[in-house]
Image (tube, rainbow, N blue to C red; front, side):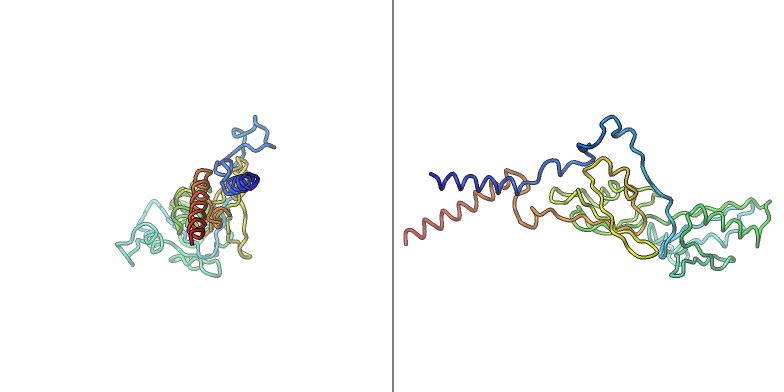
Length: 266
């Protein structure tokens, strides 16, 4: 009888430790140390202006009263007329080289490394007015990133690279585009590998905490790598829920019982 009790206690411990807690599967929880009347209405989202990096692709367009005079500045993708989406952006866009420059027709090389798109617009407009046009030409320049490319790996529905045509994408939107994080994914420590001029840095986000919306890494940036590591339950091969754990243990006990009975008959 004592052995049976010990076995029951042992199995109960395995079931409890192998199950994934419900709180680890819920996004944006109000943690114990949070002040309820400030969550979530008064959360301040933090997003710094993105500064252009090497290998970014810029979409530059110039408009004027006489559009013919600026037609050479607006590429039409003649290299591949069948290209669409990201391919079209590649052919029509201006890639930032290893020196941080883009080569613009009639203007030559322009350094854009570390500048925001708004700052680049002003630089191009000023350069055009200084070298080629007068104020009466009403030059209007727009500069945008040719899509926000990122990669998601690990415990996500469909690992791989994605390009989103939006200037503002948060971590939840990015993950939704590669499939939901399964129960076996660690939502408390989602890694963001971000590119900086001096190299790469790894940042961690707790998606189960509502305060993640205040993180400076809540919004992803071009070339970010999102990595969701698996929970230990997956590596151990135990059940994700109490029911699945019980089923797994029952199967093991059944095999052991069968083995003992067969051995005793020999």
